[in-house]
Length: 145
Image (cartoon, rainbow, N blue to C red):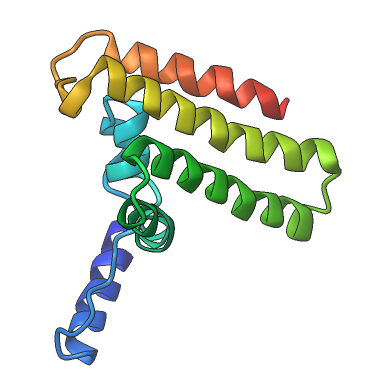
């Protein structure tokens, strides 16, 4: 995917005469040291950029707090995934609710992390970061079982 992504980025830049830049899909998500970093800087950057531009920033500009804007962005991501589950997987309401809850829970976890580690003070050398992030993902994935 990295080679294909690089080709797409190069072609986009060349064909649009540098007016547009392709956004990479991922930025090494396995190197994330927190759920917040996973969603804000490393995983599914295309959707993240769209939610940031269309939900997060307008809420900030309207005077809402960054934490509230983040939670609403996660809620909207959950709504997008509910649509995918409903439309493409023909899932029941349990599957759709699970998809929504997964993203809302991750939004809440990100808010909690922002209180515990203000200004992203969690560093790459923190020994518990990997185990903590894996435990958080496993716990929230149990919803889907």
